Length: 220
Image 1 (cartoon, one colour):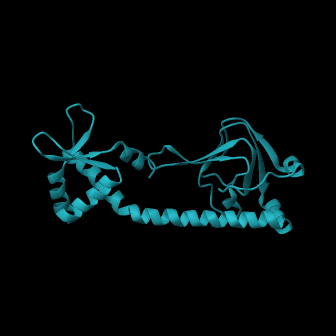
Image 2: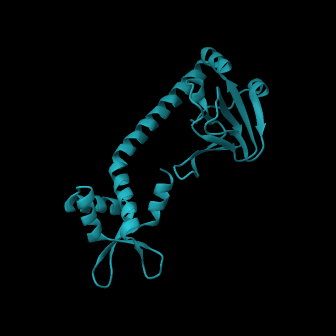
């Protein structure tokens, strides 16, 4: 999906334009497709299922934005779901019409190439971010596993608490992770506001998940 295509002429709207009622599905994740869409008016929400099987909103597109274009270049099924979140007028352009527009309309072709390059750049950035985050994800998964073994709740039955020293010993025995590495990784998670380190009245240290961590896991 991308943005920035100017509104089309009335002839193109008459030929390709379709009206979508509010909350109507344009296509679903996993559908086959061989056409792209350009929004003339209205608003479209792009979403994708997370591992938790909930819909995670990727983008909200408006007039001039286009989406679904990757189906014109690959045989892959739709990678996300598109829903007209308001009453919308959208151009639905099939592959043969798209090829003709690319060959006969140089400004349109340049705009499409530019936006597709921007899309690839964003994908590269996201991949780089995932590589950077992978140690964090691993540590969060280990925290979740340890919660099942030694987790408890605070006196108000609200915060989930994991005993810090026991977790350090658990990682050393089961994962071969040193005390120093565990401390560094937990500090990194704390700096990213994913976990909280706190002491009880006796000075014992506990690890607690911040509210942000649940949102974090929900979109993975």
